[in-house]
Image 1 (cartoon, rainbow, N blue to C red):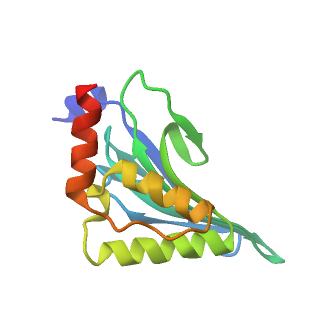
Image 2: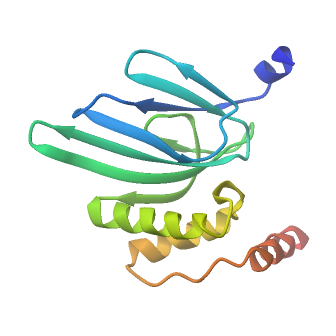
Length: 158
């Protein structure tokens, strides 16, 4: 099994835990492996098509400098991927909430959805919808798994 795991391309997420300099945390997702890289860094590995979300916070002596909520889907070999800081080699970006207001709104949406759904099983298209609605400060459509399954089936027919 070890040889098989090495042959599958893996998306790596590097999380920093450095006190007031920066803190990252995994919101959801199922990493296949977790490695302690250093005292301040942990590497999580995801197989292709896995969806995961994380918070990235950076600060300095003056307080919070950046705050991001990122949801991504690990890519497959040969796909074009988005370069995301801390994600190697990259991933499909589903949601990126940058700044305090948008990050807090994204976290509220994630909390609300987690009450009724398994977050890493929600359709990527819905996460893109959430991204657009948050970026435009609009209300979200409720998640309907059957609707998004139908959307995926319709696209595969075309």
